Image 1: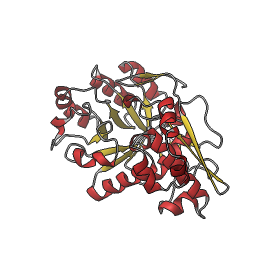
Image 2: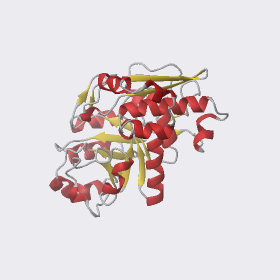
Image 3: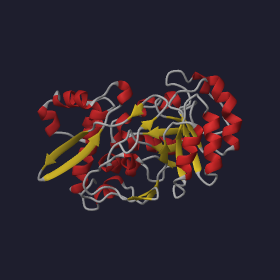
Image 4: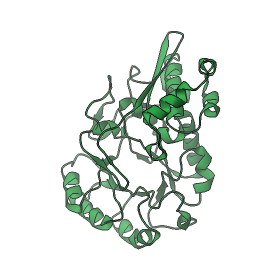
Length: 313
């Protein structure tokens, strides 16, 4: 990591990822997965899960089978995205032809790690070319941090991610201030499993489910609590389920956010498919890494170009 990635729940100084490769008829498909750390997924646990699969089942993989072979999470994400990559390389027109989704450049949010108000404002001020900022905040001085960053960058779109650290009392008290500072989205204010207070709540800014919505199986449970869904490939188990969540959001009028669990350009590339047309794109993972994979995504002033086919898709 180029710097500690600090949230309300953890400080990340390095990440371990698993690279998955599938080969079929002379084509190789690749993917990268980190798993869901707050569920205890690790590289070792994912290797164990994948190694336990029947080799015959792997040889006969299709996207539908993967959904039943493994639960949502990092292992399924690795297999699913690697299979999409193989099929894209076997298809004229690549991933766009397979999905019917044209890939265009996208502007990503860039995260400002949790710190004291002055430090967070200074980081925001030092990046005047970045127009979309995601603020990691906890329950300590969140409105002071917000005000300091807004004063440093009144031109920037601001999204807050509380990672489930707020109380219901803080959430209710903060609403008018968030609206006054034109916060575009508040992500996961209350802890997953403790967000009953959001049921049918008319809050001054849109609320987004992250930890409260892991995969498409959770959508109906959160529909009356959140205005937006954060789709992450590691959470939901790959591009197949992510596209299903994307379609559900479009059908139900939910805002779409596409996020990441950190990682290289290889982890972000399939997420760029889901992110086409999304309301919020949060795919700045490679900017936090000291090194990247070959043929990395080009990210300039927060704008991500579509991946080269030799990277993925």
